[in-house]
Image (cartoon, rainbow, N blue to C red; front, top):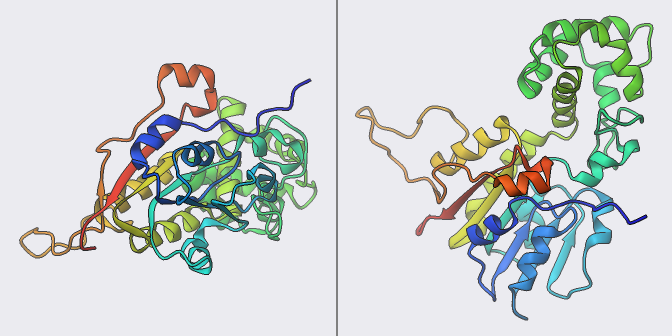
Length: 307
């Protein structure tokens, strides 16, 4: 029986095209995973080219090729600038991030990411950290749970769900995925698979502080990019996509324009210029080959000269 594929890179050619690879360039892959995007970039680099690849999941390290041009950083991409500087890299030609969960993480039962398998309610991408999904559902108060299910999972009855969790955890252990799903089956709205997918998404985002890490990383992109350098970000849900879209357009995370004078004129130039007016989505052929690509959205931006 063949080994399962660690992770199928989504929008691979679109990312390569978007980054406009220079053979002698320096590139950062913030989410190395199975290495699909990085290995494709490496093929286009000459002996002078370099890659810095980040992944906080220890399992990703075994996918790193034996290549002098590549540096592996076993940490979260929120520390982007710090580790680039540590390796004497002050500016780069391109930055890539493929957000979300790898197929390997989803398909490894004991990681607790998937509703399909039995295992502990874990969901840590970095297994060195202490906070797990079980800790969240076992210790957060009703208001905290309500807020995270509503904001991060867009769960329709998030208030009822939060109240039920606080009640049932007094008498029932929520430590495993089956415990958790069985204890909450009475409050499930609509399709149970879709419902728990939204609940698990919310817990995963909270456990890994995914939106906080994304914002921190994006703020480090403009000073790290060379003029005309590019950044390509693949998102998998609207929360991430909105953050990336706003940052590419305005250089901040606000929904409203903030740097305008009383006449509505912009008073500052954002450091990045969006190359993609609308996000690039997978083709029908790619979605057929890789159903997990269905919700992927790619946005590309370029460093503005003088910023």
